[in-house]
Length: 509
Image: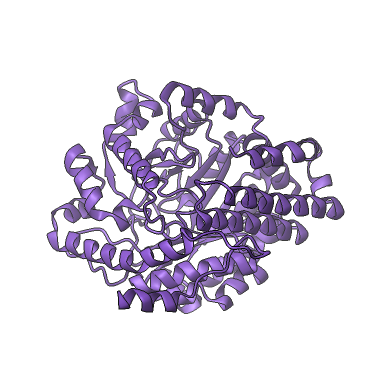
């Protein structure tokens, strides 16, 4: 932790403690909130100025982190101003995020520190779990091949144990739930909301198609106060309904309205392809959902093809990806939208987060069959959680698996060599490196498509060509924007580069 960050916690400690203890009454006090917001933003800028003076500073990286932090502060302020958070949600966020994550007063701090002392590495900070494959929709191109006619799921006991162990062994308090459709999960007469209610000391986010969030579900979500839905959309009504089914877009809007009235925060999940990238990142689309529909956050995922002879044509082109990088940072900096693109925003989280990354923000993914993978988009697993538990193992032994360790070593090596952090993903941006690690450690493919991807030489060649094409574009940005010398302007967060100029420069080279 930097000196300036420590100073920030020290200076805001008394206020934050008061907020944690007194709850919604104080945080909804507008004059007090504005004082806190102003002080937070001032501290973020001050922290950035100090970082710029360090010899090991990467100016563009530090500026991205500051811009992202400012956007989060503004986002929370807007949400509180518009009363998008119920008292219950505010109380939960203050205790879990404020006390445990910001003030570092929770027991999880001691747990994470113990893990670091015992292993020499940082513990994972969150988990992604798909407890069930079942889904009430059958979307075209579903990565999980989910549907109604499946009973593949984690048992309640196993699901509960994963969460419990992540808390007690790693200090994790944040869980992302995927699927299938999380709202369709049932085991032993219990569902996902029952799990969230049991683990009231954690905060959950779920990716959902939104069609099952009716009045009853909304009432339960409001009562629980520790689960935020992220609605999956493909773009506007026509594009969403084409993939997900007629009427789904309007059902999402209806679900958002119910949650907004109940004070349950929600976001959206957007999968970018070459066909919709410009649509989902347009000012019109983003403004509509952030300003009119009350969306608080957005996650952008790039279409990831897996399988034999699968077409790579749906991926955003290298040129589109570079445009997405520029446009997303424009939305973050100029409109303060809380927006994360894991392939383009590696600068915010110090690269790849997979395999429990040692950056301090890593995670693992566990699916409905118990398959443990480095991440959702890397379907290769050295171990199954059901087998691990039968053999008397815990999540700590899962973390130690050589395949996962090799990925963490790769991440550290890439970061320490000042590799281009605009290309953080082993499977997407460094496919040849990943294939070498798979060849050495022989993790099991999660499904038939993942197996076929290992056998298809044309697929590997296509991924490698894509990687090289994007590297040739993004390297120019990395060198001239991120590794540049710090400017002397009054605004410590430098301007975004003119990407058309840099593309032309790259062509000339």
